[in-house]
Image (cartoon, rainbow, N blue to C red; front, side, top):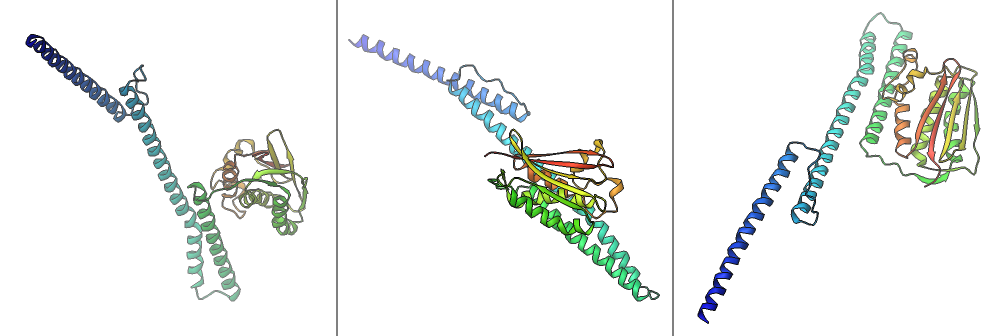
Length: 306
């Protein structure tokens, strides 16, 4: 009986030693594999080979580590992108503000002269006021643009009638068009609906319509229409203006872009950029067709259904 108990005790001791050795081997292997995964991540590897046996704890931990690594990398990339956007905005503000400030300093220096007539003084003061207005408009536009880019402003599209939006934008452009004797023609089915944020979409359409009025000759014509395509509601703004060369179709939507032959016209080159951003955030898009000397047609596509 004592021999039997002795053998049982020896067997238990051997089993314990074997279990300890096996556990140590598993822990060493697991640690090595974990360190390997961490080294690969620190090296910036996009892909790490995962064990085929997905039920193993080691494989599960590797998968979770890889998921965490990808998430942290995405956050880092987004942080870098936000930083670049902020740097670009600051650079743009600095560049755009210099011109009106420089002009105001010039007019201020001229006003200090003793040989100016009253009419000249009044003209220089009017020019200074224009520069102040330009600076004020620039700052408002830049603030709005930066808030849009950084996501502070959120569009909230809802399914609603299009006619109030169309009528509002046409009414706002009416005085400028009337001053240049430009005919405005609106054609929109009162029953037509789309998915859009009325406030921001009105600004996008308004920016395009204001450009049409600005670059259409006196006595010209602008037609604003709305219809439905397969998946979108299309708002078209067609003018009889100067037209746009085809090679500039992409350029005109960039921030602060202005063609050389329109530098004398008022504007900052922000309107089309903002319009595109607003429409894009509503899962829509804008395209343009134009012929130099004959006019342009800007088409805004908004989702037809939720």
